[in-house]
Length: 476
Image 1 (cartoon, rainbow, N blue to C red):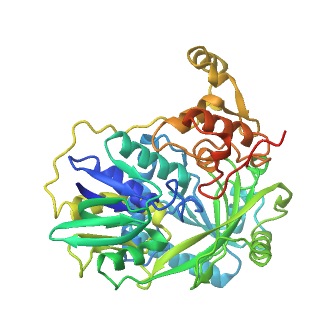
Image 2 (image 1 turned 30 degrees about the vertical axis):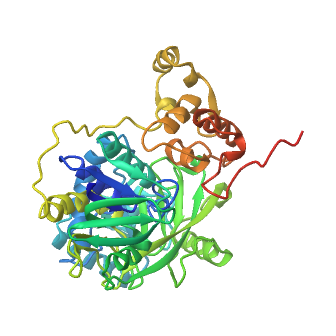
Image 3 (image 1 turned 180 degrees about the horizontal axis):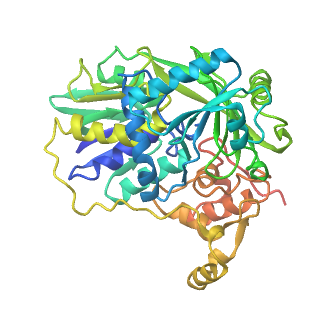
């Protein structure tokens, strides 16, 4: 019997789970996929928004600014890369310059600090590759970038280290409430019982709420397509570059990532049935906008493209409250942008205010909130590397040439919480396979390590879960 069941292993569910373990509560997380961070938290821009865009008085505005202030220390605790690179909202006309002034005033109303309007000359001093057509920008100095899947995995891993239980491959198909206890069943017949449910299921959150007895949660979907450039072009821009927003949203951005790549996108396409396929039309639109924003973008350094689906509610704001129809069901749904930025603040509020309204929260004195960085070896000095190799020779074997990832780091990803069970899970934790060759060299070696560590045949190793086996048998 659990005190709290969290459903959904994205950044919201993960940060809430970790926050719960700060107290003496028996908690678990249910995730329908084979690994955590498999939904919109995985295909995310990784932007830590300053908070000037959200309408004052909304939950988006409140939690964005609070989360932005929390993020540097939060990421540092969890060993996750965070870079305070600042954001530039670029104007291409006098009318858009007026919009930037309104954005600045909105940000100030939200509590955002360190913003200024830049002239064309000042903008060029900051970004040498900005388009000649740009006439100015709003500079939000508190904007940043973080690794979205790194943050999610680290939060859930730290929660597990502090006693939380993780169930993967747990697709919820029924929820029954008997008295004050929820019984949650999976497609495979597993059953988990708990006194409180927190619905953080992203695109599936409407279904989860309905299974629990609340049919009022309406969730829509928008697909966003991205292009990723190799780290060789990592100095193309240093800030996150936004177009001046319209009623349709923030639009295409050009940004460095926390790992030194350049990310372009996303598009925004309404979807009746969520789909993560990329399209020639969508990627062409990204390229068109990037060429308007910048001079000679190094598109020849493209190493991959991908798409994600963002969930939003019909309220067009975060929904963070106890269900009005089902007592004990807490809704954390419709968490679209700036959800990643807001996650630490949302988690704190949900646990202290909503869970705290149901339980007497007694601090867990044994809680340990720090976590070593997932991959670190290539950044060490020769002397530091040699010391580690003397203790563990597996760190002396390079497996991923592009990203310089060692066997020791891959073994750690397979062994520690939450354990990486397949190729893509290792990739998200270590960056093995994220370089120019996209796993062309290292993938077979990673597969062998997964098979060896789990005591399974190589034929059982998958790329990203059931049905994605790499090999079917011996050919000769």
